[in-house]
Image (tube, rainbow, N blue to C red):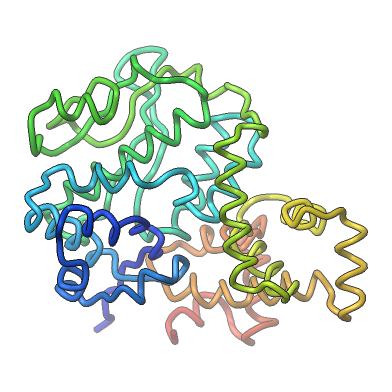
Amino acid sequence: MNKAPTLLVRARALTGFAELVSDLGGDVDGLLSGVGMTTQMLAQPEATISMPGVVALLENAASQLAAPDFGLLLAKRQDFSALGPIALIASRANTVGKALVAIARNLPYHVARTSLRMQAGPAAGLAWLRYELPPEVGVEQRQSVEMCCLMLIQTLRMLSGDAGADWRVVLAHRPGFPLPRYREIFASEVACQQSGNGVIFPESLLENVLDSRNPQIRVAVERFVAHLIRRSPLDLACQIEELIARQLADDGCSLADIARQLAMNERTLQRRLDAQKIRFTDILDRVRRKQAREFLAQSALPLSEVAALLGYSDQRSLSRACRRWFDTTPGAMRTHI
């Protein structure tokens, strides 16, 4: 009998958790230990932790701290940079719509099995950015759903430059506290007990040109790159590996792209690599091999999606690479992980 795959999420999803609990007078270690986590686990943003554990943790915190808006309070302490490498990828899009597509496409890197998709809104001219958690994470999801929906609307406001006062947030669950408080926090209309979760907004916003000079976007990218440099201050290859790993699914993960993110020109980066007898293509291949093993372990991901996440244009390219790396096919490899 096959064991069901563990649903995982990056630890950066809990950015600000310990500080918020402390500010509310709670016991950080006690709450974490209740779901089998430690503060050390939260100290590594790119590490993976149990997604059902995170969902339960937020519900427990809300209950024990008598803070029914705990998830929303946590979201207010986060920003675009909480998406980590996905923020880096989205920042390279040229329109709001393409940035949202990039976020949705790469979300499996950040959190498994979560659905983020664009669909037609309830009326002509409206779009619905719809967000759903998998049912396997638990029946009680209110804190996590509300947290993610607030982060969605914050991200959409930042990308579009629109305050979004006429947008509408929809939630599938019953309200956890009076609706005026929801409207105050979201700064928009909020409706509960709807057919799904997400943000409804004018479809025309999707065509808005993304301003690469937007200071919020720039700060998010700079924070992530600074995190890489702190982890590997003198190791150029490690910095390049991490930057590649975070944007493989984005077309154009090239030497020029990486050089720009490291604040140097392409020739300078190439000279530094040559001096260390390192080939960029070797680093790229090494990262793909490592991530292929990780993604193939998540049996919920279709092979076509694994190929896309690794930056391949089709599944055949993934198959050829797996034969070269592991001397087997992706499907055969999946059954043995």
